[in-house]
Amino acid sequence: MGLISLAGQVQRKLQWLYALDELPPVEDFASPCGEDEREQVLLREQEGEVELAVRLPPEGLCPGARGLSFDAVCQVIEGVSHFVYLAWRIGQDLPTTHLELELQAEVDKFALLALDPFLRAEQRIVQSIHARLYEQVSYLHGAETEEGRRYRLASRLAARFWAKLGARKAAREATVTRLRAFHRGGQAEKIRLALAA
Image (cartoon, rainbow, N blue to C red):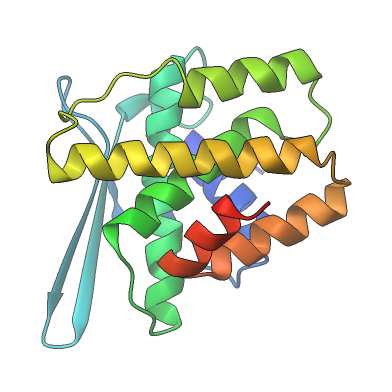
């Protein structure tokens, strides 16, 4: 088997993690974003048909690419997470909100960066990634904007979800079970799971 892109690897891991049926390859919907652009997932619905397009950092689409920055890796995970979640929800004929997408992507970033393979990373590495993703962050959108509030809420909820899950020191199987329940839930269920004691 030849080398696959980071985007393809992320999709495979997410499909395995969430026990999803095969989805179309994200690379078929992806194109590189410009030098000064961030990842984007574009969706258009017309006459019952849904069109998806994914814009990712160029290096995330190159097979065998090495040396990606932490930010570029996070952008690739976020874009692929959005694609996988949307494709799965569309296939299930389920609605999706912007907050759901952002919250799922925030959870997916930690899952793939800190727990891959799940629960084998050293605790200090897990704590460092948690801090980088949820504490040492800056936002493109101001706190007073709708987007800014949404991104901040998604980050806070994901940080809480992982902090509580980590505090329980759950076994690998229990962690995967909780992640699958989180993925299958809509917005209200995701928030409930993130806030649950």
